[in-house]
Length: 244
Ligand SMILES: Nc1ncnc2c1ncn2[C@@H]1O[C@H](COP(=O)(O)OP(=O)(O)O)[C@@H](O)[C@H]1O
Ligand SMILES: [Mg+2]
Image 1 (tube, rainbow, N blue to C red):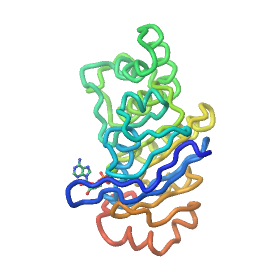
Image 2: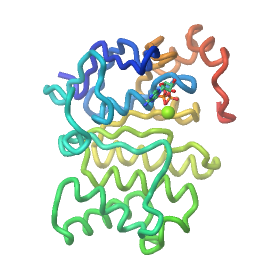
Image 3: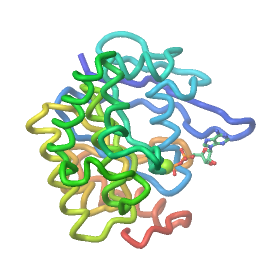
């Protein structure tokens, strides 16, 4: 049984089908890439997987049970963590306090929440800035807060939404290392939405490609990169990131 499976997953916003009958499966322990031009439906898919949006039709099965109709708090408790493409830490709170928000998904104890937060902050490299207010940090640090907050929920599956966007090449390489460590040491399964192609290719065992809400390709990185339909989708406009 797969850890996560979607069957014909679909969401419509008025006349727009943002995600269109997407079948996807993710095995425990995998790093799976999810790519596609801007507006392809990647973030919307994550929003359905985490209970933010209810699908118009189709099913989501996680650990053998259906997730469809669950709210984000319940999905988080079941073991799916996520980062947000637009980082939005609480600006006046310290890094530690921001990360503790994640810990409270699994505990009501202040002491337990703090201990968990400190552990994951050490893991992603935030210990040196733990007492600084989020508003005073660089984008690279804010992206790490997102990662740490998600890890503090103790997920079995983590959905990473463009955690490298806007980072310089050195920072990208550091995040690649952290993602590898999350997968290998913490044994967390990962779905990675990313425009930094070299990172997706290096990290992913398999890649799914969305275009206009539809899955247009899936497979190992080299096959996907050479797939004519994928190349056409990327060259066909809507893809503006310099990192491509
Ligand atoms: N809440 C919403 N209401 C209406 N349209 C939406 C909403 N969320 C996303 N969309 C639309 O769905 C499409 C997919 O968006 P998104 O999932 O953010 O793409 P991606 O993350 O692949 O760049 C876009 O056309 C976007 O405008
Ligand atoms: Mg997006």
